[in-house]
Length: 295
View 1: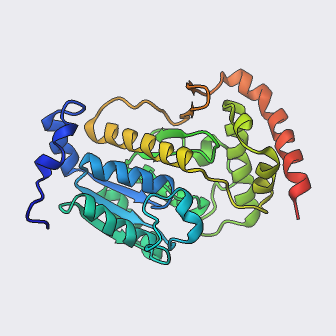
View 2: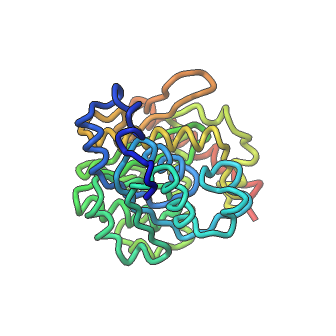
């Protein structure tokens, strides 16, 4: 610990946005972030600077060159380093008093303990199996999960223990399947269901190259990611996590919303009847996009 560091001085400018009593609650809070790269990393940075007292971090990957375009803890000298470890080390440069626990690929063996220890869970992973594990265990333990869609627009949604999980709400074909026994077809269909939801309920199609999006849907190209979108999303997730810790009302529910930065407006889910009418049209459109890119 730095001899000149003072938590009170570090967080003094927070007061006014939060009360001194709320800042103490943030200091006592524990947040579990699974996935410390793009959105997860941006969320972690915001939480660390807000004065969250304890972070549990899990990630199975190492930083690589392509992460430099958006992942806030990726630097030239952290390439090749385990993401969770590099994130911990840099967080401690922000707040030397921060309590950080790090897990790598073995985090799944400890999922129940990690989630039970946390006040709120952040899903920063893009792996379907890991996400299913997070949501299923979080529901059993009464924990809220903060998440975002695979969308060209920043988004956020908040799933409380009593809410339908994405697996249920979006109709993934994974019910009854163990999180670590998913087939390639199940993964592809779940991603398509998420893309369908994003297209039905937002103007995302206007803000991305659709020919490249078709390659992503077909599985022939990695997801596109852009720093302003990714970092904005992580910040929205941090706000919702802080709301949970402080017992404040959430701005998002389990359906979430999209932040259209291009038009300066919030896009909320459509009426259920309108969405039902649009869904088959969007599904056919997505299949046509993916067809030319399919191997």
